[in-house]
Length: 408
Image (tube, rainbow, N blue to C red; front, side, top):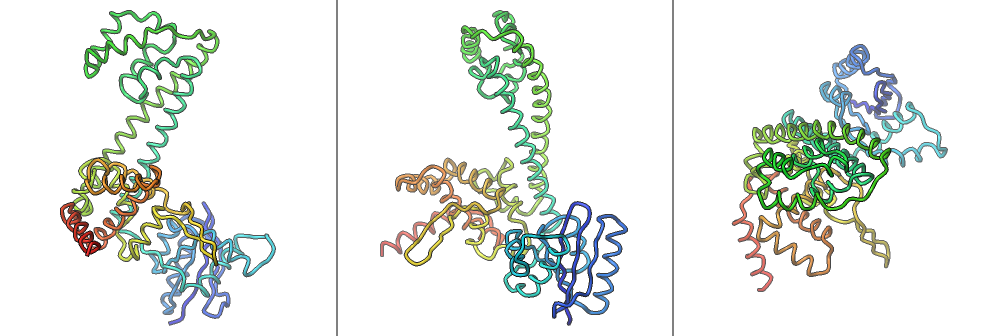
């Protein structure tokens, strides 16, 4: 069956396409507008080629988006190409630094024709897994936005009113937000009476008598004087930031609840129930969303460890051997694995023992957590591959058998 190799240089609105046959001869070149008319024109060409019994392969830098979904829906085998690989492939065809969309599309087509043996076709996840991935990534964006607002709020308070930071510490707590809304300046705090404070505490009964007394003593300590014009300006900014923070806190909480409920409806939820933190929270849903459910997505646990950035990169040449931190990886997966390893220390006996052993060998806290995360990924890979739930007792038995074999 003849085959056409398509190179797709994607953009926000207009995509440049180039198609060549098995001998590198051009069979198609077009600009595709990402609108119904432009995609319909591309669809007619794809359907006509398939009707002529031509196999269609496409190379593209971005492995997701509307154009990728469109190609997959029309029976095209899509190969994602790392942008760094494309940048180096350009040097094979042109020594100058000049580039264009048409040239990049041609390079992608030629690279796919000559080097497809080194590429892996895109295996899309199910719709449910794709939705989970979008939900978890959006939830992480909401959390990052909330963190940025908290940092802005803390910086603003340090400029004119540091006492709430010293007293409450956690500025995203309900009691801290309510206090700042009612007492937004040093002058307002100086006028706070014990009776007013008692009424405030009644609105937050979880504080308790001992904590409320301690907070009162901290709040009434002497403050540094700040010019009035600074207080007036920064109090205005504080009011705006508090409104934004309240909205962000509600949004983040709402999104977290959506992620938890959606993940509970997926088959993966039953696999991770016995993992540390498997019964609640968004950490494991975020981790499993990055794994996906496409068959053969992960070749081995080593492939998964490398993608998650849990293992270093070794550069060896002659007598030189350098081990470096792995910067190129799936950042969302690395974040999820790192914090999963962290919470597992207090919820898994073998994880705690492994972490302490790493620290005893002189490894730093982050290094020990990455090593523990790499261990967990070996287990998680087997769970993902075999669709088997985690069993702590079974894993401890395996560790005991390994120690017996080593002793023998």
